[in-house]
Length: 421
Ligand SMILES: Nc1ncnc2c1ncn2[C@@H]1O[C@H](COP(=O)(O)OP(=O)(O)OP(=O)(O)O)[C@@H](O)[C@H]1O
Ligand SMILES: O=C(O)[C@@H](O)C(=O)CO
Image: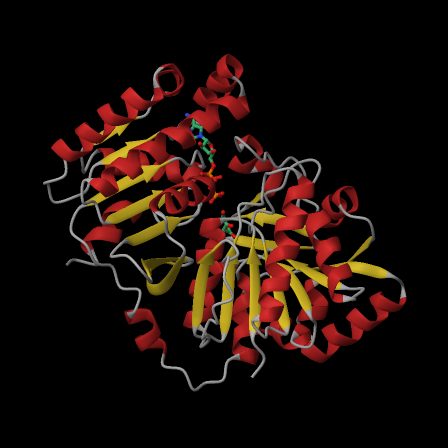
């Protein structure tokens, strides 16, 4: 069986794809960054999560190449560059430069671009990316604090970020099945097309994509293509229930941390505030006396941790508030201050025996997992599509790491009530 190596550009994105791989029959282990040693991982798929979505492009490239080379040493022969289903990227990259570097390192001249995840409302039609019924550039993503997306055309986005030529395989070809897609890939390759954007309107298109690209050394996309690819690569020998059991949540004391400003997280926070104790995290206080403020927030969490639902700390703001904050303190400075505050808070909460962390936002999740010293985890049962519970392989810590736009409105409460101790 072909071993799959996944390089994910953020934390919740990595957990998202790992969850779909497990659900579709591949035993999967997720690692936080490239491990320093040469331990051998026993799994059908290995997902390495990086923090390479919004860092400078050169760093994203070198981190991704280091992950590739480590995955090759692990015996992986197929590779998947996982980015966001909303194609989150800065003006200078990083999806284009990383894709180019991986192609070159693998000696390949073509790959696919497939961010679609229809179960979560991300579809691609004629190369345009939609979030539910809106174009990406007209969705809440246009106000993202770090990677605002103001263009929805994936071919144009690749043209702007990458070195080579972009082309399209439209949904009408996907409707004809995997052979038709494979043939079109060949024609586009002959025309020198390096990045082939794949339309997908529903899950059958993802299954067709998986069948058409199973021989490609490198594919790129959101987690949707992983459904199709895992169905092709999975051995079938692996017990899905058993694999998920290893990641079932444990640990009594829980906290909810929300650093995402997405439209969905704003709604989830608004609902949860009515159900559980909630405390806003003020940017100004984070900047003024970070250590003292973090301790104050921890004390509040501890005082409110004995109810039915875990206390919530949130920096989540709507687009208007966020714009105001960013004008006042600077976008990078304010988001860094919030991340550092959450880091200090979870460090202290771990010392005070908190064992379950429910976190909203990819960057925020990366910071939390890093601070908790989580190096690898088992993928557990699914709370919402793309968001499983996961459990540290070494410490008794459980995490639910939610991508900004994922989950239903009642996600924070469901993550607890549907998985009681
Ligand atoms: N009130 C705020 N003011 C300024 N920055 C904030 C505020 N709240 C959150 N942030 C920052 O915004 C960023 C949000 O990114 P994060 O990746 O955590 O969420 P997201 O982008 O919605 O999630 P995902 O990447 O999974 O889609 C973080 O760097 C966070 O620190
Ligand atoms: O693909 C997605 O939407 C998510 O897995 C993600 O990457 C958000 O950070």
